[in-house]
Length: 320
Image 1: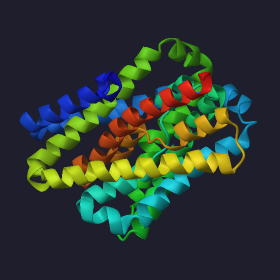
Image 2: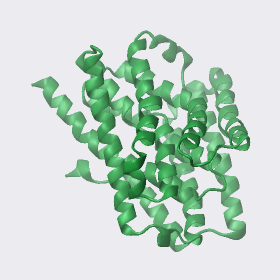
Image 3: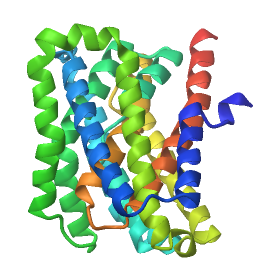
Image 4: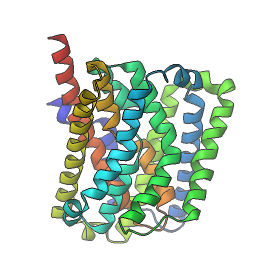
C-alpha cells in the first residue's frame, strides 16, 4: 500500500495549503514573502544551470530519435490534448482551473522521477538522463511560447510581453549565469545535491504558500466546491492515461526496443512541478495563482502513484 500513499514532499505541499488556509499572509508580510520567493526562484534556476553538465548532454545526443519522441510528447501531444479535449474537460472544472490545465500541458518533463522510474523499470537510464534534462532546459524557452499560443488558441486571452520579459529576467538570466559559473562551481553543486533539493522544494513551498494565501483571501474555497475538485482529479487522470497509452504504443509503432520504450513512457508522460510552480508565478501575475497551480500539484501526485505501479510491472516483466 505504500506506493499509493503520498510522498513526503506531497505531504509538505498539503501542509502548506492548510497553513495558507488557516494563516494566510497579507499586507507587509505578503510583500516580504513575494520578494523572498523571487530570490528563491532565481537561485533555483542559477543552481540548475550550474549543475547541468554540457558534456553529459552532448554525449547523450546520439539517440536523437528517442529524444525527439519524448520532446514531441511533452511539448506537442500534451498541448494538443489540452485543446482538443476542451469540450470534455471544461464542463468538469472552472475556467481558471481549465487555464491551469492548459498550463500543465505546456510544462517540461520532470528530471528526478523520470530517471528514477526508468531505472526501476530497467529502461535506458542514460537516455532518460539526457531526455529529461533536455526537456527541463528547453522548457525555459518553449513553455512561455506555448502558453501564449495555447491560451490564445483556447480563447483564454493572450500572454503579455511583460510576462515574457519576466521569464527572461527571473529564469533565463540566472540559468545562463549558472552555466557560465559551472566551470568553477559545477562540481561543488553536484556534490551537494541536497542543497539543490532544498532550494528546489523550498521555492515551490514558498510560491504555493503565497499563491494560496492570496487565493484564500479572495475566497478560494468558496469558489472550489467538492464536485469541481473531483472533476479536476478526473481530468488529471484522463490526461495521464492518454499520455501513457500514446507514449507506450507510439514507441512500439516507431520500432523502439523495450528499454527505449520504457524511457519514452516515463519521460514523455511526466510534467514538472519544480518548473511549473515558479513559472506560473512569473507568467500568470494578476491571475488567481492558487487555481492555476492546483492542477499541476494534483497531477504530480497522480503521476507518482501511477508510474510507481507501472515501473514495477515493467521490472517484473523484464525479469520474468
